[in-house]
Image 1 (tube, rainbow, N blue to C red):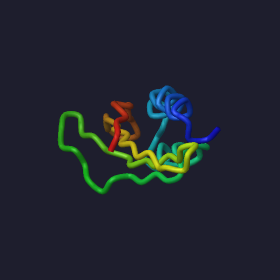
Image 2: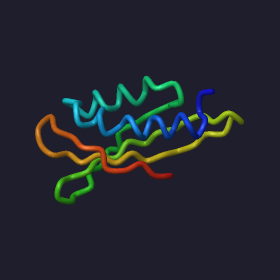
Image 3: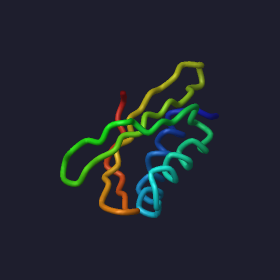
Image 4: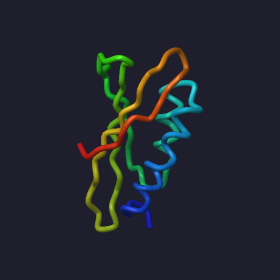
Length: 91
């Protein structure tokens, strides 16, 4: 059922492969948004100035009981068209 904890776990397990193969942040955002458990996804307007720089996606997943689970997905920006999954945490 969409929005179960298992769906979110599966999403998190798939993210390293998705981010490693993506050629843009928009591609990552589109893939996340296409997942059945995801109600909305938005790339945060800020860059975390670290080495390497990091970007956050704000994700809302619907749960079975109708509540919304908010997650922050953090991705390293390794250079032009190179990304790496870092973490997913509660908002």
